[in-house]
Image 1 (cartoon, rainbow, N blue to C red):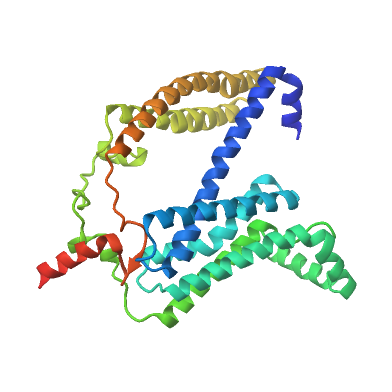
Image 2: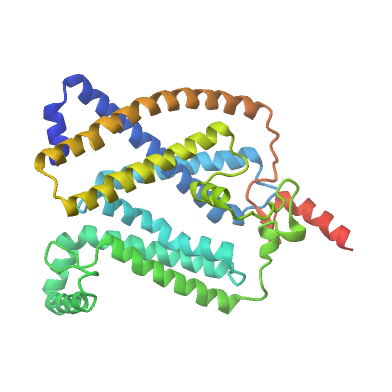
Length: 367
């Protein structure tokens, strides 16, 4: 808490207000994306598979997403109001996020990149991983007030503490903490780790038990004869210094000159300046000739105030102009967009509804 307290004392009234406004805007922009991601995942993966394609019109689909968004938002509000902050913010966020990731991660990974995955394995993975991760968050939240007093009253606290102490020594201190009446020996990150391992194991086992025939990955990924017009396989890459650097930086054939300049600028700032100059070179110089307090003061003045200040001015104009023009172009393009009502995520016979006609044309040519 030293940083926000110091900023409150050092910054003038106007800048404090602007800083608080910026934090509120960041919170809103982050939370609305989290709510939207949660809602679309829940609707598309947990509700839509059980709804008939004839009854789920685009209007009803959108209304369903809106209703679920309100419900998820209320759950966020109630949970945030009643749940106390007992852990580091980063660890707490990762722990709560793990409730979704521990269950859905194996399901997405094996669902996209395996031929043996089944719906039964996906449901077991989702339910087990999410439930165990939620119990991990609940375990840390209720440890001091409920769980530890219960263990102590039953005489189980000391044996359990000894077990986790031996396990901590076995893992050389990388896993588990020393158990006390205020500290749970397993933090939320570790709970998510074990929940993910169990979720992966159950996905593989249940899928193999309910597995009937290999899934057609070529059809799902539009490869080979299932390629859709406009999605043909790109030409084979020619290996040279230009293409290798382009791949490392992320430059593709769609990049225009301005996009390439931006990509190179981000690469130079991130890797050449921040990593190579500010870290590698300064570390080597300091090992050869230790820098004085005055030299470190100049270093941090440049790297934390001067350069970031210059970058802030550049990005303010860059994002302001680029964001505005792209937003105008975005709404302009939306007017000419032709929506496909079958492109709603529904699957029939292992094929998306919007691809059924395409698959029928391919089968007809094959015959």
